[in-house]
Image (cartoon, rainbow, N blue to C red; front, top):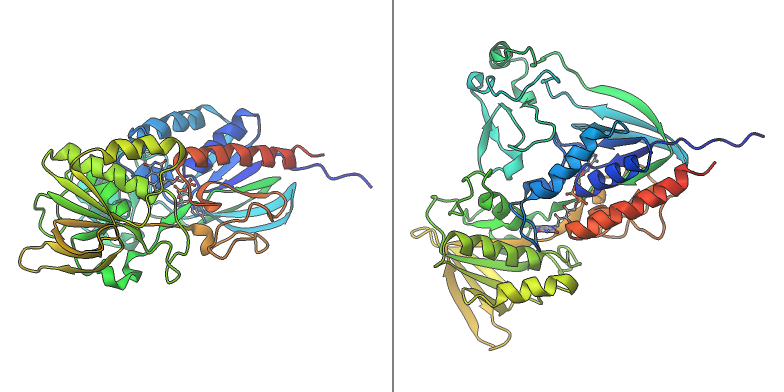
Length: 421
Ligand SMILES: Cc1cc2nc3c(=O)[nH]c(=O)nc-3n(C[C@H](O)[C@H](O)[C@H](O)COP(=O)(O)OP(=O)(O)OC[C@H]3O[C@@H](n4cnc5c(N)ncnc54)[C@H](O)[C@@H]3O)c2cc1C
């Protein structure tokens, strides 16, 4: 019997830094790549950061290079607003069905923005975690790749949608768009579906969602970003007042059997980084970090030491208890048992930032029933389905540089599968 020849293509699910890195590495090694991203843009959570540690550079500096590599390489085909509906088959021979949700804006869009004036409806801005609102037709964000507008499905079929279509000088608004499906044959699949923030409202005693000035760490990234809801000014969400004193509550829902039993490994570094955002903005501001243990190992120890040395940064070992807000002042009271002095501390802050951890998106969805995940939803490296390879935060909660290394390793494993004849 003739041996079946492997399909040569590699499907990558998830267009964050892991998926993008895997895509360019595989394509530059000569393999056809299909990159499938469910959001309207590539870049994942990194695109939503203000800066990333340890160098504190803006996300663009890493992403732009990769976007250019994608644009220049005909072996990468990428799809946004795309999801994988089914995968069947085996290593070397997978049949995949992809669904493309309608954007209602086609490739004629030049990004000119003439359509926006015709839009009336505003929706919560998903890119900014709902901290502001955007018009029904909008760019996902200032540096979106692809740079193409998007129409909210809720206005399709209304007179507003027709006005928006008429306002486009390029005929780019297409209200007839429907979900499209197509099939692919690939030899290997890289699962780079990443993470989402732990739902802070589940930690009832911290009052997230109840106290406006209690936010999560990912929201602070957006508040500090020049392309964020406040043009980079960190201010109180309740009234826009300046922020002088900020408390960071580490392990908010992490290392806790009632929430996430594991450590996400990056939250301490994220809070140290975010303290620098605050101090850069206001030399008289102060950041207090309430922690259980500070996790900043290897190359990150220097960063920790540097930030900690700033007299405006206070590190207090203790798990914060209940958080209360003062309706008259808008300030937020945090109570903590200082484990080093044994004293109960009660202090008021302008803003409280909950350092919530990372939940793998594979907790809710895997494309193939046999993909093995641990109890927390991370794809298991050791018992992978042959030909389906987890990488980046789908596999473990990690920083950007580890995600990129993981992507390269996953590509090598994928090539070993598709290269087999
Ligand atoms: C508050 C905070 C701050 C951080 N700051 C830093 C920092 O300064 N420096 C640093 O090195 N690391 C930082 N990190 C870690 C960093 O965010 C991760 O390392 C990085 O996001 C991992 O990239 P990823 O591609 O694996 O996942 P993601 O960034 O989550 O990307 C995954 C992509 O997959 C897509 N996707 C998910 N499911 C599907 C599906 N079913 N179909 C199609 N697409 C799908 C998602 O939409 C997303 O675009 C921080 C983390 C937190 C929590």
